[in-house]
Length: 619
Image 1 (tube, rainbow, N blue to C red):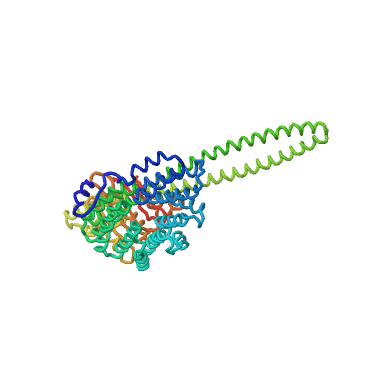
Image 2 (image 1 turned 60 degrees about the vertical axis):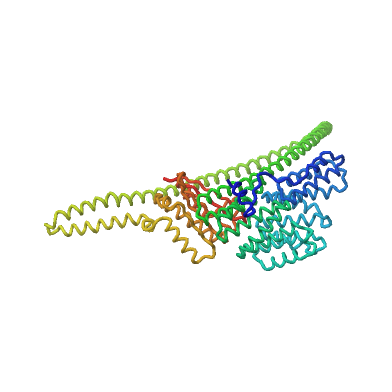
């Protein structure tokens, strides 16, 4: 359906969704590659094909040919005199392709390998450092990026490198919110006479200008400039730039409130990213679509796309892990062969030592009884050392056992404390219900019956007053065991009031959405209390630690699901999931989710923001 929308609107709004990967390399190159008679000619055609895929933005194909060049240049015998330069180019292609596929760690690895093995005299050295800086920029490691950029030349002797450098540096300035200096640098590069010889670099600089227009709210200018870039990129076969320009057009229309055109633009861009396996662009497009559907209050689609966003994150991580496993397997095989060689050498040493030992024994018998005493003394020394070592091992083992017992006791005490708290909470709820429903109901019934009997005895009014006082005390005790605010207001209104109060003194953009509200307000009171406490923990952590500009909390209860879904997202600094000390707030959240047999998923990394998904089954 999305493809159909892209084709039907193509003439009016010029959005194009491809049903296949556009062919950019002529079959003649593949024929000449397969029939190459020398290694030098083969490298020539491999490099030519890789350059074409680099220019068109075909990341998968660029990765394939980059690794093919690397395999033949690094691991096969070669007499080609310029083999060192070919190796550096292979690492550069591999780094660029990994970056475009979202495999940022692999891109860093390839670029660092190229930078460390090349020198400033090599032509490709500065390109490898520039690509490494750009990768650090996308990873959010601005300090490393800045250090690399400051060490790169800014002269115009190499016009191509000067323009590439201007693209990365201006993008860095944009993310640092120094829009004035970034615009000056871009306009200076665009004013150079040689810019006409580098069409794709010119379009990338213009895309950076569009990014500034987006961040400064010049949405009509953004749409006009991005439309022009999109048409030129499509006509010239720069398909990666075509997708990014389409994404900017979608942003512009969304900001102007034209959600229908924005949805068409973003949907066609999403189709193309899936077709070309551009995972990092899929993340950007999905994020834009989620914000669009939230603006349209279409929370069902927004929730579905958040699931897709998590799938893309997992796919990037899986791809990265698969490649790491291959590298580990290669290292394992190499290490295995080295161990076999070492074993052979050790066997030879043992044989030589055995021969020497036999000679020593013969000499010992010839020397006599006095020489025999020396080995006996040595044996006694060794035996004494062995006894000392065994004693030390026993002491260490005893200390380890004591520590294990201490740890087990602490764990048991913690479990008992948790169980006691849970039992106390349930018992409070039970007592509140019994006081209110059973004893309170009985007292109310007795009061009604006594009122109906009439005031015939002198002590009657005194007993009736005492009964009223007792009934009021029972009601106060039962209500004190249940939070009053949850009885006075609807749950979603209670959360909204809390968020609004927090926003008054905060610089962050806090947003809370609930859909459908009736279903969420109908959940049982214990779950409402737990959800409200979880939301407060998330907001508190965001304000204290995340350093985020935007914080979004979505609470949904789909009609076809028997669960409550909570999705939290911020664009803050994130954190390392491998860190053992999660903090009290996150531990509290996990405990509350566990109390309701729910599940929690945390997707975060340093400088990459945080997404937390929580699912609680309805009681």
